[in-house]
Figure 1 (cartoon, helix red, strand yellow):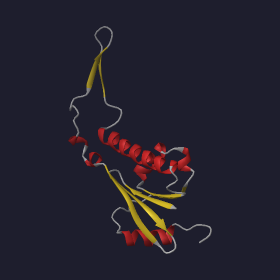
Figure 2 (cartoon, helix red, strand yellow; figure 1 turned 180 degrees about the vertical axis):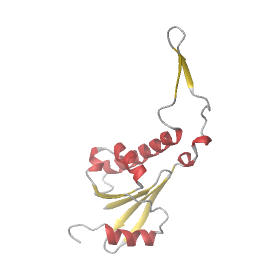
Figure 3 (cartoon, rainbow, N blue to C red; figure 1 turned 120 degrees about the vertical axis):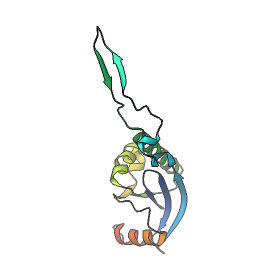
Figure 4 (cartoon, one colour; figure 1 turned 60 degrees about the vertical axis):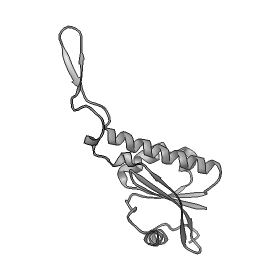
Amino acid sequence: MIWVINTNSNLCRIYNYHKIPAQLTLLKELKHPESRGKNSDYLTSDKQGTYIAADTAHGSYSPHTDPKTVEVEKFSREIAFELDHARKVNSFEKLIIITPPQMSGLLLNQLDKHVKERVTHKFLKDLLHLSEKELLDYLKENAKYAKD
């Protein structure tokens, strides 16, 4: 079985992909609306943190990661957990990942090495706007295997 993961930072669709006859079946949809907000939408202070050092020196510091990135990382962990669980119960043999470049690195860093071994294609594109038929046409054209 071949699974297709079509995702961005707030929505992930997991499909089962049959090559013959060519068919996509939606298995699951994961949503993470928290990733959609602007940085100003998150509950953070508008003032930098401060600290007091020895004597009379003062300083300030900024958070290392913005809140939106934290939410996107949470979502990538959720997707990775879902894929690892599916791998453990042999739900798929091969995996095709379609994700925008900014999400790709976060997701791939979260994937278990055994899941990564099953990735046959990675497309660095945001294709969530495509209908299932358009996505299927894209896969037929771009996700070729040695036996095809």
